Amino acid sequence: MKFHGVGITAMAAAVPSRVIENLKYTEFFPKDQVKEVVEKVGIYERRFADEQTCSSDLCFAAAQKLILDNQINRDEIDLLVFVSQTQDYRMPATSITLQHRLGLGKHCVSFDLNLGCSAFIYGMSVVYSMMQSGNIRKALILDGETRSKVYSPRDRRSAFIFGDAGVAALVERDEKFDETTLSLNSDGSRADLIMIKGGGYRHMSSTETLRERVVDEYGNIRSDEQGYMRGGDVFNFVIREIPRDIKKTMAEAGVSNENIDYFCFHQANNFINAYIAKKMKLDVDKIPHTIEKYGNTSSVSVPLTIVSELKGKLDGKKTLMLSAFGVGMTWATGIVSFVNTKISNIVEVENGLPVDECLRREYTPIETGLEDIDSQSD
Image (cartoon, rainbow, N blue to C red; front, top):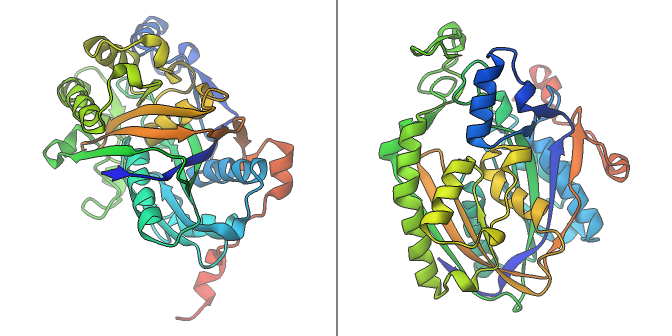
């Protein structure tokens, strides 16, 4: 997919205030095992949301920061896409509650995009397409995940990997943006490589799906409503598909390694990204990373890396390569035009509220009406 004259003009991010130090995350595992796992994956700190904080709260804080810092007229936001697999409710869509909570107009088109770690790039494709084909002035991509809530702390294969975060990106039409090329891919034959089997409508919640049990010979424990990964198979998939897709997309865009200012990879683990960089002979100085301090934040990891590591570095025209893969399996590559993109400072959130005082003053509790639903007639 190719786009002209559309791009991201501003970005902001929010993370929970609670810091998890992985080397001290030893409640269920011996210290020597923890040290071995942490050094292998390269994740030393993560952020965990508390019980009151959802992915929508993190996105709300990021969006408020973006709107205030850039003095955006809320009435000019015509589209809001919420990207997440840890939404607030089964229904309604979380995007609708965020539209109200952010004080956006009723004309604002709002919907959710449920995908895995490649979802930010997929979200870009949807928003960029709508921007080019419709009369949309400004759009928000809000990408948030609280993956800490869906993986078992007693399953060593996932207990030290995932963290929580939210990102807001403002998309606008402007001829200053050069061509953006996106490649989107999916392979449902690998759907069982990363999965939460229980709690949906094929395997509905029950005492059995919620029961935690030993799942393998290594003593790992989880329920069917907690996520699992077949790490070896995921790695084999990545080394086969991702470099190939990056090369294909770069060729389609007519660029080489030298034309790319920054290579922004999904922060899955250090070993995978180092392997891809070596295989493709990339300049390591062009590869920003956040995995050591935020862990794997799923679809948020690519935009969070941009906000965290490229603030002040996107002045003028820049070309970024974005690459992500995950649940599905799906994977996506982007050769993306950035021009004078404004990056806000990262906001911390606790108990569902931004810690930043200026954002706290702007906060308005959402009134869903769900509390009174039993007393209302159809």
